[in-house]
Image (cartoon, rainbow over all chains, first blue to last red; front, side):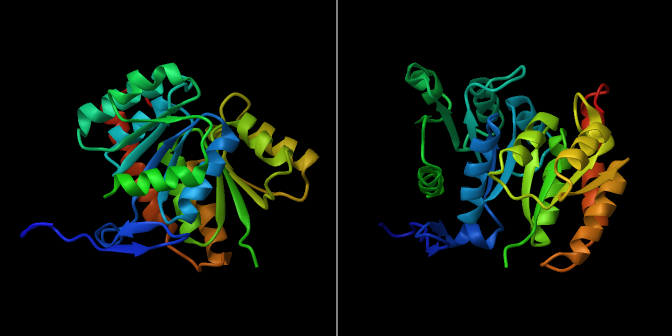
Length: 143
Length: 130
């Protein structure tokens, strides 16, 4: 670390999850979760909330985009690719990146052939995944 | 003791999210469903123990809040159903829940104002919006 490098102090919130102190000071880190399968969405949302994140649940990419366009603050988008409605997860990720170029985006799918397309707009997460693994990914994206 | 679980059924993310977060801030465990199919799934599997279902009559796509409330009363009579006719009424019901909740009372009118601003912003963006 060179002179003038900002010092990031991490604090353990829960379960060994380290969150930068600066993030805690400015309010909860808000994750927009887009998943149409109810129980998958519930499980991921519960795990993220338990880890200290605030989670906005969207059952489709259209609703997620509407939330983003409302101007409500979010810090990260985690979306499935296949969602019902007009937009899919890739189109959502593209629009998010156009509006917020630095916003971290995690894009998941059970189809590994979509990894290349997803990587254009964010980090690809293969399904199935463990919700705790998503917590680690989000935590690392905050650093 | 585990906090009571509230299932919020509301199609509109700009209404559901602030409402659900308000109840979480009041200390409840909150589950979210966007339509009647999800709500029925949440209560029917037995996976989740749900104490209260809160919804707007117009906020439940396809069958509406009355039909879902009737189904809940018939099939899950132990679940308390809170049904509001307007968003303001739903927020008032949430405020009553909040007053009785583990986290103490919080002012629901601030959330209502927030939701109204969000919906007004959408109306400006899209004249066809609800």
